[in-house]
Image 1 (cartoon, rainbow, N blue to C red):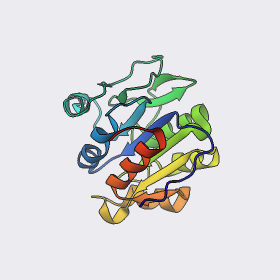
Image 2 (cartoon, helix red, strand yellow):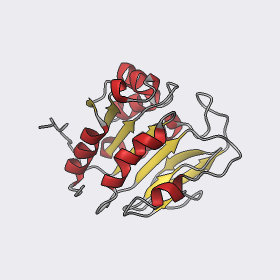
Image 3 (cartoon, helix red, strand yellow):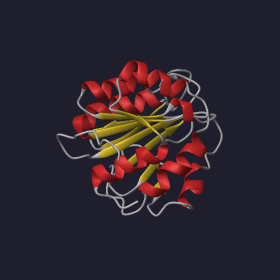
Length: 197
C-alpha cells in the first residue's frame, strides 16, 4: 500500500521533466495516465535543437488522450498530453502556453526548470511535478519552487533511473513528498485525480 501525499486543494496539472533515458521512463508512466484523462500533462524532454521531435507521434500511438506540441499563446486544456517543442523553452502564463527563445538553462532549451518555475506560479498548490531520469540537474530548482508554492513533487527512485543525476538533484534540493518507482508514481497520480489506470 502506497502512502499518498495529502493534498489541500485538488490537482489541476501535472508537469514532467526528463532527459537521458526519458523515452523508456515515459513509456511506463504516461500511457496509464492517458486513460480517462481530465487534466493537462505537460512534459519537457531534453531534445537536440534544429531537429523535428518524434515524441508526439511515438506517444500518440500508445496513449488514449491527445498528444501534441503546444503553440505559443494556446490555452491549456484538460485531457491532453503536451510535449515541449525542440529548441524552445515552454512556459505557463496564466492558463496558456508560451514559447521562448531565451538562452538555454542548464545547457538545455527546452529546460525543465523553466517549465516548472512558470507552472509553480500559475498553479501553486494545484500542481504536481515529476522528475525522471536525466544526466543534468535541470528540474531541481524548479521542483524546489513548486514545493515552496505548495505543490507536490514526485521523483523517480534514482536506483531505478537509467541516469540518476536529475533524480538525485531533485531529492537534494526540493525535499519531494514521494520518491519511488514509475509504477508507484503512476498509481499516486491516478489516485490523486480519480483517473482509472
